[in-house]
Length: 139
Image 1: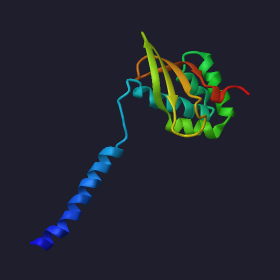
Image 2 (image 1 turned 90 degrees about the vertical axis):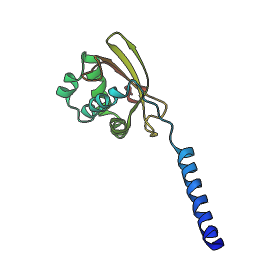
Image 3 (image 1 turned 120 degrees about the vertical axis):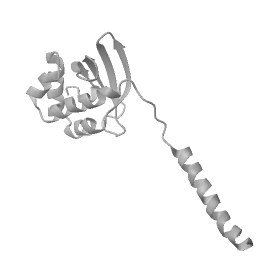
Image 4 (image 1 turned 90 degrees about the horizontal axis):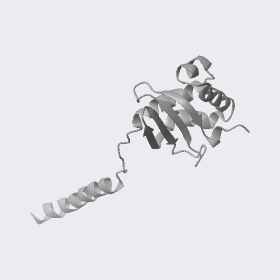
């Protein structure tokens, strides 16, 4: 009997430590009301990466974001590719049907130089009104 307890005690202790480690290392996550804009932003940046003027115009409401996206597409393509895959909303602001969303990534591509997109319409069918980032500014 004593041997069985001696063998199971380390297993129970290991299991408890494993559960505690999982709870302690669990990443902090919160639902953002701007998460719905991440995929439309990724599609917009992928169109910029492809230099797809037709798709950029379809996703935009004014010439400014199309021109910005084409300049970005001709610029740092490695950074733009990372942004088109890994961006996530950092903060946003909604005023009527206009929503400004500031995006960031976990990469060092354009570190501390976020991409800001102003959308018209809800996250179901948003169109870009204004696009900006010092990362993809004209050089």
